[in-house]
Every structure is written in structure tokens, then in C-alpha cells.
Image 1 (cartoon, rainbow, N blue to C red):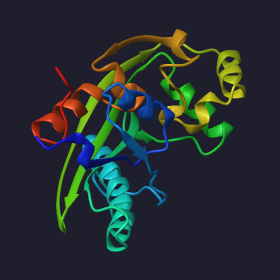
Image 2 (cartoon, rainbow, N blue to C red; image 1 turned 180 degrees about the vertical axis):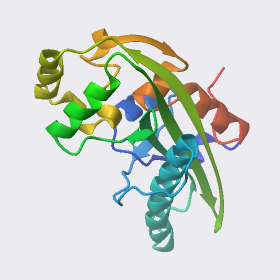
Image 3 (tube, rainbow, N blue to C red; image 1 turned 45 degrees about the vertical axis):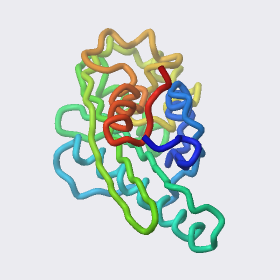
Image 4 (cartoon, rainbow, N blue to C red; image 1 turned 60 degrees about the vertical axis):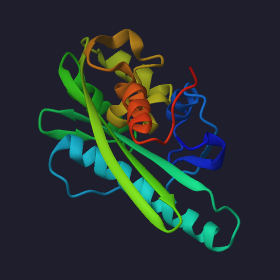
Length: 209
């Protein structure tokens, strides 16, 4: 495996939650958020999330190519993109557009089971060559019933406005999560164990023994 110091690792996300989770791997990474509008025509939820993650990573790759052309950084580059969606019934829930949309989502999820999909894309670029892979994880989440007062108070905190499905399992909303089936970190927005094993399998990174 190549020495990690000769590899440039980039997280293509501005999410502080993803950053905190990736830090657990002791990877010396940079954060370069993707700036483009998120879009995918994939139909299956997992593929949809993974495709969004790929577009994030690829956008950042294009910017690093310009740096390489300028001679500022010629290292092997591994870019990690990630995106999370919430699915309730047939509806895909992204980040709420406003407080009314957040309230609508929370009412929909109240007392029900829904699915959280987090897609991840890895792009490795070196000497003009690129290779990429993408994958996703799914976790079922069950909420307790939410009263209108609880929904209003949570929205007033500001916490749901930057989160898919209008909630964050790791924050002040935690008391309303009845149970999960699957990987907790997938719901947070970054399936850390799967990411690590994919990096390790491809020879991009491994934890020191």
C-alpha cells in the first residue's frame, strides 16, 4: 500500500458530521465541498444517493485537475463524496426548503418507520488516470409519535434545516427515535465502517496496527 503521506485525501462535503466521523480514521484529509446543484435520474433510492455522492466527488475532482495542471499538487488524490436521503413510503425527503417543509416532513415521519440511505463515491486520480466506485447503505428508523408542540419546538431550534428528512439522529432530536435497524452512522450521514473497508480493499488507506 502506498504511503498515506503521499496521497491527498479530500472529503467533498461541508457536513460537520461527516468530517467528525472521517476524523476517526486518522486520515489527514482536506475538506473541499462540492458547490453544484444536486441531481440524479436514478430511480432506486440507494443508487440515487450514491449517484449524488459521485457527482459531488467528480465536481471536486475537476477542480483538483486544474491544480495539478498548475503544478501546485501532483500527489495521488482520493476524493470521498457522500450524500444522504430519507425515504418514507414512496417519497424521497431531502433537506427541507423552509420551516413549513420541515414540519410537513416531521408530521409524515411521526410514529412511522422510514429508510435512510447514504451513498458514497470514491474517486482516485493519479498521473492522468482515474478510477471510481460507489456504494450505499440503508438503515430503517422508527419514530415515536410527535406532537405539534414538539415539532414546532424542534424546528425553532434550527437543527432540522440542513438535514435530510428534517432531523438529526445524533442531536437534540434523539429522544424521538424509537429504534433503528442497521448502521447508526448511515443515519448520521456517513457509513464509516463500510467507507473504511472500501478504502482498505482498494489499497487507498488502512489503519495502523
